[in-house]
Length: 224
Image (tube, rainbow, N blue to C red; front, side, top):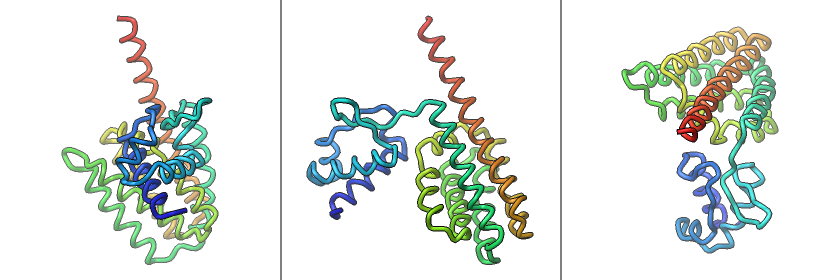
């Protein structure tokens, strides 16, 4: 891949992950080429890579859209993440060292400050949460798991889920991280896996509740 293609890929991907490009939105090669400062060919290559990551979909006329996931799609994504991150966490519990635990604790304390302020700082939570989970993958010492999970963890649905977290949800996430750290300090794979699986499943139900609330609101508006 060319540098221009890599630049277009990174810029378009960031727009999708940030929500600037919304689910179901049509994406035009010409407009994206202008925004990325490249020709249409690198944009076309970038969209192909993003389609392989399930961030872009093409219709029968080969027009590109930001992927719009159903609740079943979202649940499957969370289930896959729970299975794979559960496996990574089990591996990490047997291999993690004090330095890695120390970095995880530092990020979780920063995360705690972000969620206990009068107005929770969601972006700060996301940043430190991502660092926290990336250290689990690092400690798992499995490049295959890291490659697959990196895509699942960074999907837009994760960002949208956190936007629906209440202050209590955010603080519960911090507490679950603390329990996970306790399991890591004791190098207990079964405990660590149980905590991360529950952690991810709870996040799915938060998303599902918000999804159903939005659907019900749309039905009410349509009936008025």
